[in-house]
Image (cartoon, rainbow, N blue to C red; front, side, top):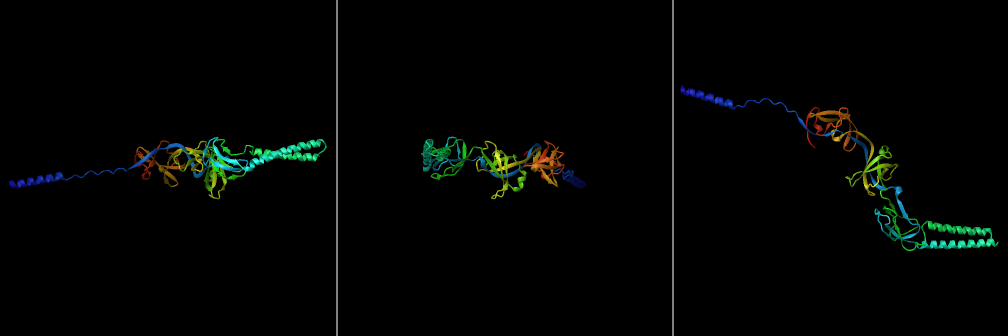
Length: 355
């Protein structure tokens, strides 16, 4: 009987141990609200412009080019400059020798003038003595006038008695050599162009415009110019000066000339990118990444008290990175979602990450 009691007690203890080791069921957990990771920016009020992006070339103003020539036939001895070179006042440009007939022309003209004057005096004396007629006097006067005209013409063209031996042509002011029209050893006729140059900062930009865009262009519109090979350079300011209404037969585009501010630093024949500012306004602007297409408009999210708030907005002017926001329920300095907005829903919890 005592052994049976021990067995019963042992079984009871074993049952107690088993009951102690059995896990109790946990209380059901509530579902966690999803939290989106986003980056925000402050909605700002700023100037935003509608622009037209085109390309062009830096060229001299056509009416600013200056041509160097001499009024007598010459032989080019040497060139002291090259195209594109910046020259200072007094710097040697080229040397030349007047042609063999230059001084001879002047000498012959001077002899003819002296002879005509002598004949005129003689005829006048003979007329006083009744030995010559008025017709002979008129002929002598005409010859003298023609001789004087020839002398004056040569002198006005720069032909003088000193045109013997090598002549040096020097720069009379600071400028850039644009084009050389002669070579050493070449014989050039009188008044032939020797070289072309222009003053510093007398260049302009010729832009090529699609014909369908020309109606947007007006005179004096501001333009920002940036060299293509130096995209980080601060843009150079200019204004639309001349608009062509004739299509270029080579490019099939229209040419627009832009005048540049002084000391612009652009190089002749440089290829540039231009942004023509068609219109400008001061408005609320946001990064383009903040907007999501929504029907005929867009939606944008702001963050308030850790939750996303959806807004229906319209847009105005835009540039490469920003766009004008038009809406009644948002204001300047609101936190708008710039990244992570594709996953958002109205009222969704968000966690703002630093960019």
